[in-house]
Length: 87
Image 1 (spheres, rainbow, N blue to C red):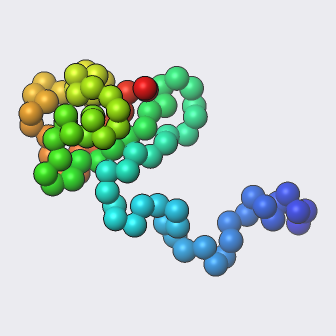
Image 2: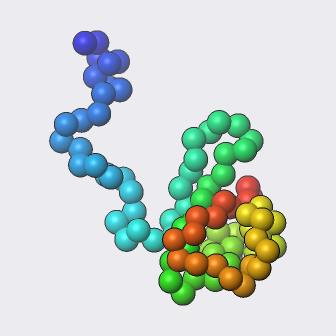
């Protein structure tokens, strides 16, 4: 094994999920950079609103509604995963 192989191999002492938000909150996650179609995402938690999520991430609720094909932007559910517009 070369030093490059060792750097790419995961550490046996690293717990699964290391580096993920501990609170499971609405932290955006960066999708792999596969081109212009890669989006950050946000997961809805109880009490969240589309406008509140949009404001937290610096985008408009109208852009989020359009990007996620929402018929009724007032009706969102905990556990839904929304794409965030680039911006």
